[in-house]
Image 1: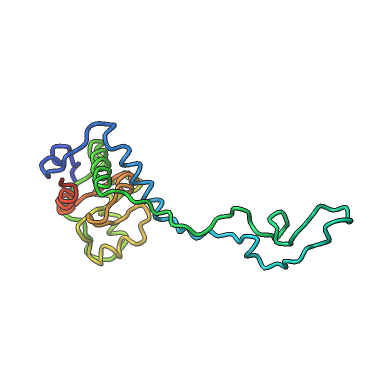
Image 2: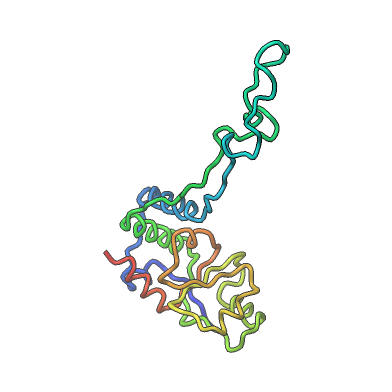
Length: 205
């Protein structure tokens, strides 16, 4: 399978307006990537307070006359096994990002990768049998020297998905689902022609 480098001229033919200004869209990329990573956080960290630990509420010793420091309860945060003071509680880390910012970030990331010559264009990406060696051979034909490769298509058949399961340095994703973080995280990006058309539709103003 022959793969060609997707040039700026090819992108213009596909009606993808590239961002050539270095400063334009950089803040959008940062905001979107931070939002994507924040959304992956489970937010389930939780520490018990002094009211929640399973300890007695009685006073350890009388207030005066012992020569020891005053102590009101065993669940105090200063005691071993006591509750946590200002500990973590379950929370939602999701950040709301406007659609226009997401689109700008995606266009900026794709533009940067195209201008750097890291995007390859193929007619299709599929293997005939669900075998890892066939997938690796196909991958080497398209992006031989890449450490990590992202393959983007409108859709993949089940055979290709099965062949790619054990290949840790490659990831298959749909053109409808690819995001800014993925475009930046991989050394090389392989786009099918139908995926390029779909991305053009997503980035249309």
